[in-house]
Amino acid sequence: MLKNKYHICGAYTMPRGLLEKRRGALPPILTALITIAAIVSAALVTWFMFTTTSSAVKQPVLQVTDAYYLPGPTPSLYMTIRNLGTSDVTLKLGQITCSSDTSSITITNGTYSYSPSIRVPKGSTVVVRYYGIPSTPRDGDLCIVQVSITAPVTATIIERFRITTP
Image 1 (cartoon, helix red, strand yellow):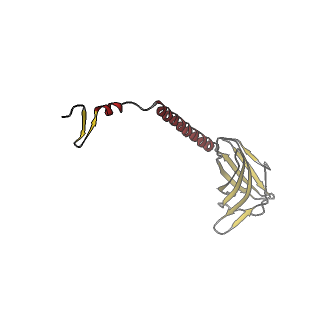
Image 2 (cartoon, helix red, strand yellow):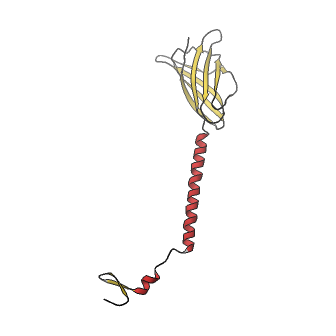
Image 3 (cartoon, helix red, strand yellow):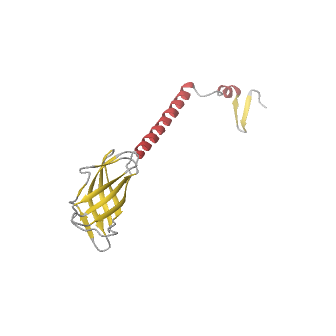
């Protein structure tokens, strides 16, 4: 064997001094840069998770639980709106369209109680009376109402419900 040589493979040998110089750790500046990059990326992931969770939690969740129509001298449509979200909601009701297998009616010129807007606290329900209805919805009609949310966010959603008539 050769003196002062490392045998790496059959065809190549390297002087002992070169291998001994290559031992060691990363330079301190490179270690600091890697640490800073890891901290910044962890902070960005935390910020992203916090903002998306925060905005998702603040989204309004509304449900029309009951709706019934009472005919008479002043025909009225009553709707129970439930706020399932985590914040109070202020909303306005729009046009109501009710349809069955054979017919369809649209209620556009009715007025509702709590006018001009309805405030539904979180976790509670509000019964809204929609009166001055020009047409007569039938029992079991599927209705759609356009709801404009004005607070805490601005959005327009569509709620579906069925009408019950006596």
